[in-house]
Amino acid sequence: MPERTIEAEVAVVGGGIAGLSAATSLAASGADVVVLEARDRVGGRTWNTEIGGEANELGGQWVAPYQSAMHELLEELGIELFPSFREGSHTYIDPAGRSHHYEGHDAPLGDAAEKAFGAADAKLDSMAKELDPEAPWEHPDARGLDEITFESWLQAEVGDETARDLMRSWLAGGFLAKPAHTFSLLQGLWMISGAGGTFELFEPEQCLAFRVVGGSQVISLRMAELLGDRVVLNAPVRDVRWSEGSVEVQADGVTAKARSGILAVPPNLTNAIRFEPVLPAWRMRMAQAMSQGSINKVLAVYETPFWRDEGLSGQGFAPYELVRELYDNSPPSASAGVLTTFLAGENAERAGRLSAADRRREVLDGMAKYVGRRAAEPVDYIETDWSGQEWTRGAYGTSFGPGGLTRFGDDLRRPVGPINWACTDIAGVGHIHMEGAIRSGRLAAAACLKAVAPR
Image: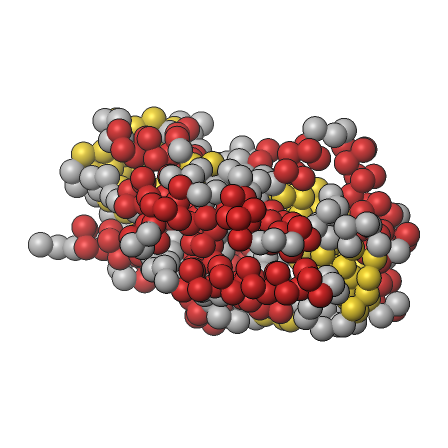
């Protein structure tokens, strides 16, 4: 196929929520824009499949009530939400492997663990509230907070072992998707600050409150529909040539020439693109210092959500198990039963070294501890290893090792000539959520509009 050339005012690399938010914002302001996406689909780290005749999600999916940019965008696009199912008893699996069913918010940890967990929670909240989520590295004690690992803080500040393990598996495993000794306390606090400034907003009733009718990828699909043929799929970008006021983006089969550009991909993925002239040394060092978390998402499919008939919500938590968390991910009509879990951090790394058959068996046996033996016999089993996706290479977001955030924080969004950056990984409010992708995309679009405005 002969290569074609597209001329636009702004070229956007990446057709996920961040890139499409930037592109639709630019188009709405009258700017001529083109989006180049490496995959054969839009959506990035959101990706739908079909179960029971309805959409289900292989990637990011939940919407929280406090995520204002997301709710605004959903209204603009005419997309509705439905509440995540959590009626009935939840399950907690204790350190001895015993299952406990309980009602309400708090798992039966035992008095000592509950007290220690609550105290640690309060300490983290207090520190997170002191941060500016848009620039946590500017905190007066940022360097000290960035030098200590989250694991070291847990060992020093949380005396109860169970509470320590719960907090480790929740923040390190559930959100940063890395071992707690590999990132700093400041990096963990940024996660809390960006989500609203309190650990409580990470609870399922808040952070996982709603799902998207039609699956979360429909958000990107609707934005792509608005842009029409300005979105080019199957166009992995190989080279970017830039100078002041000019960007030439070369992808497979297409070249885009523009006055300004937005790279809407995780920062570490920019290492796969050749820039001419090369990017400044500070930018390359920053990208080398970041890595994404390790996530496998699993959907186990059943003819019906049988656990509901037994008074179970399908929701559970087990800090010592391979299946560390579980949720009912059935379609809104309950046309099929779906349980979902995430193998994150060390669990993803260990599971990735198992054979597919052994991993499936361990995961289903783990699900059965929550809702009974019927969970071990699904009619379908769908697993997505996001670290193995060529154009993603991890999830939920990128993060630094200790010392990296204060070393490179100011560089995360710093433009390089006519090139701006966008993705949830570098967002402040909504950091590592779909909310952050929207905000980051719009911020980059605003910067480009200034660059291409008539003088």
